[in-house]
Image 1 (cartoon, rainbow, N blue to C red):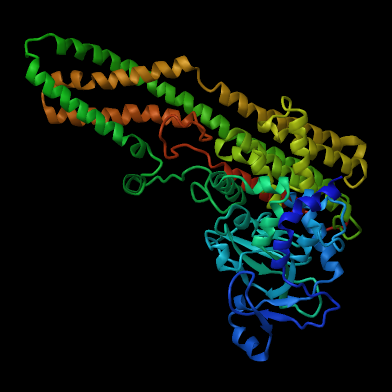
Image 2 (image 1 turned 90 degrees about the vertical axis):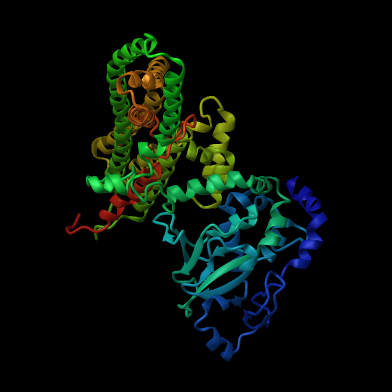
Length: 591
């Protein structure tokens, strides 16, 4: 059985790890609370807390951490908190009791933790800091404690910006051997009376945690992900949580109507920034053509006039075709944008129906069961919207990989049970539910949880009206989501875009030949070719940008001329998942 095999697997490194474990202070110990002294890492010395030390550290809270005794309630809370995290799920599913058998992995894990209290508003660690600089700890928040996250000097918005009791903090840098990805502020009340200025935490040395987890296959697979993959996952999570954005919080690059601003302040994300190199190359090409004509083609030759006539006819055709092509591309871009907003509205409608019909007590507040239904549906809707854009946008697709799901589970964005169900569905139904279709079960979870609330009478459902309305919103939401896939796959036939590309390229290649016979001036010809390249080539590039609103096409260089910042949509939907519940939490009339 696993309970007999695991200790033998672990014995190779148990004695080494056991030597590193601090002697934890239990309730029956006679030790007094200790305060961290100098040094770094797990081998730092501890000394008793004196009154002089308190006064010296009053203005330097980062240097004051009080060691508390660990009781049975602390162990039970830690076991409950860690069991919800995918990193520890397999390890804690073993049958051994954490308080017996000196050679079992679970006992070593819990013996490695120590309980501390820290000042309120203390910074646990800072973004970009090496774990060795802050002690290299991984923390678990005690019940009632909270932490706020700050990335790039911005506090993350709800619901991702606040970590609550049972959350694990700082494991990313330890598992992946990277710097800290966020600054963590400790705040909120603690779980024991009489110490309102202090916050209770549990911590474990990252060195010990790494060695313990590497004995477990599932946890070891989490830490074996490449640094590049971790960076992509972390960037995606930071975008959807609100700490990173493409356009400073706008869904597209903001525009201005001032001529001076457009000429002097606007460069990044414009056609000028993407097409100026092409214009310069074409000006060099036109210079070579003019020199060739002046040196080798006599003025009496009919070659140049003939090319000039062909080019004149082609100008009218190219102008009409390329402007029409841009119009068609913008229509496609606008249809995708409208669908993104429609999906947001349909999700919001779903939450409005539930919040308006949630059961209330005599004071008009939600009952605890109704509040749970609203919270569950809100959580599912956030995951659904995130997985929706991860299915269609390459920059978020890494979240749908096993490594991405594991990281989301470790960060608390997914529960351990949800992670296991999604992985099981993909394994059992690889064709029906591939990696790119993980939004499907989330939509079903939203509907089923809402209908379950109706069946249990936590959501008012007079004559089945609410349940029917929820079904209509869910089916409409499904149609809108899959319409995006259909539009992207059929956005433009290859033959059409191929013809337009050839037409524009040939027009620009013939431009120096056609212009030279009219202008008869080298400088004028070169400047005119550059301007034609900038405008005609720019129009074609603009059309390509319109045809790629989700930033999936890597075949040409673009700086975001028309890309949609999907993280804005996700963050707005995250906030909207709780807005209707909060707005209806207090009523000015009785119900």
